[in-house]
Length: 258
Image (tube, rainbow, N blue to C red; front, side, top):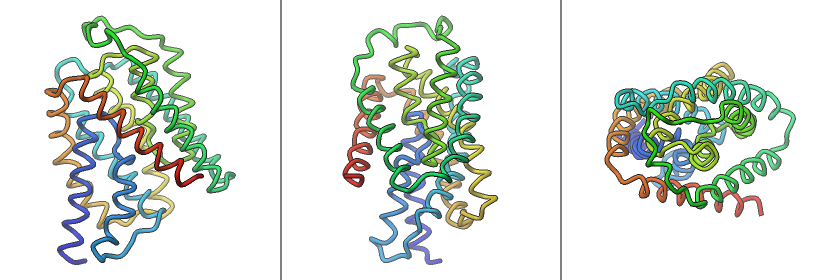
């Protein structure tokens, strides 16, 4: 593999993981299209969709670990929220991953499009006063959190994503979790969700290990840097950036479907 190819893959991993750490998403929502379309633009061999999803799964696993580590101090990680939503999303992602074998590619794309559209709409709903709540006084409906993350897990398992792009708006809009706690806790929940996806991709031989290693190295460097930036950036700015990112992804998916 040429030096140019290695640098290209590293930069894709770095940019995606920086945004991942800053916004509390696994990053596959960004890195999936980048891995699919950017290498051929520079004359390198194109990855297949299976190879891209395999590399993304492994990379998300390491990016979220690095992001959570950066957020471990400051009271941003809500352990109760992580336990309820993480356990449910892990069960859901296994169910969705298994059930996806029975679905057509068009059906999978449709599920992904619906999830992304719901997430995009939710991000534009006003979220007044959530960042005024002290982090040690945050309360939420545990069974609602578990039920919603189970549904997200099933959808995420079907489309092969960790599901954070839908978890974040649910935590902000429905559960009323403050923005920085949402970002930190969603990284931890996404890490739990990515365990099943990573095991599935590795055991079925869908991972190109050298590109995945480059992406992992980029993740370990960039994700904590993004998390540090996320602690300093105004929460309203973080919400707008995430909303635009989810909206753009939803638009691209629906253009492909239609």
